[in-house]
Image (tube, rainbow, N blue to C red; front, side):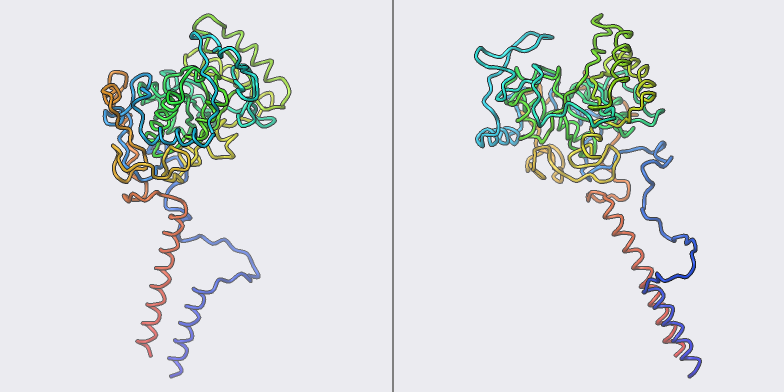
Length: 451
């Protein structure tokens, strides 16, 4: 009987020790936890160099670069009469609610500033054209003091990999304002940008002067770009856009914000590096300007317009980078810098494991019940009535087996449920509970046998 009592007491002590945490140690020691805090490698783990992929929202999107991926999208200027009904309905609702100002369209020739009709003042508070340097309080022109917000326009391009390699070698990331038709044309470069954990933002579908467009044309330029990025990044939804040529006004910015939840980013300095290849400027002039700006005051922070359109423009940034560092500027990807550490509307970054399934329309989590994507997709329908929009973009798309990076498979399970840090914690807790319950059961059984 005594031995049975001792055995039962020991079992109770063991079970009590397993259930009750102790925090009154009179000494310190290191404990090697038996379970990791996460069931996957962290984003900076070397294994990602071999098996890099972006976490997704669990939807089976077509592989980037495949015919199924490019087929639903316009190959050139979007047809305003062939937009998804949900986009048009969202626009009409915003107009009816008085959220879209009734500002007349501007007009003008390419490479010249648009002109508004007589009687319309572009610098008035009612119009506030960014082309005419009117600053709407909702737009972003300046960075935080002491910061250089790194960004590039007009990608992806054949020269994008050189830029990405330089950024990676210097532990830098950037925001890439991408053109929709360029993504179709250069899917490899697009995926390289995504998989290097650089941020992707909207730069319209075909790079027009936005104030010259009708409301529906504006929706098409932004919507198709957002939808393509959404479907090509595992369900991410861009948070920012930059108007081509900086051409925006209160009507354009309201459509971007009210329909798609996009915030407008302009710039406070312009390198004109796009003009190196046309003779409009020289690498030396670009470098001289950068020297002057980077050695100047740290307030406001710098948002400098730069491009990845040519090797010369990429080289201009590479040449200026040592000046950024030697003058004490802190560098950060622009979207992350002005987005409070979150580069997308529904995800932290291009590689973060926190994508929330959502549609591209503002406040619309599951906008479609007739989509060309699987029924579980939150993407709106992008089927159209015009043959040009339904045709494949294979003529302008570099399809290759090396770029076909499907975001369908999740990193931890085959479930369509979005993977998240909270679910990982739940799995860890469940596993610990199973170990504990197994231990208690075995102990009780042993006590019963001895008794």
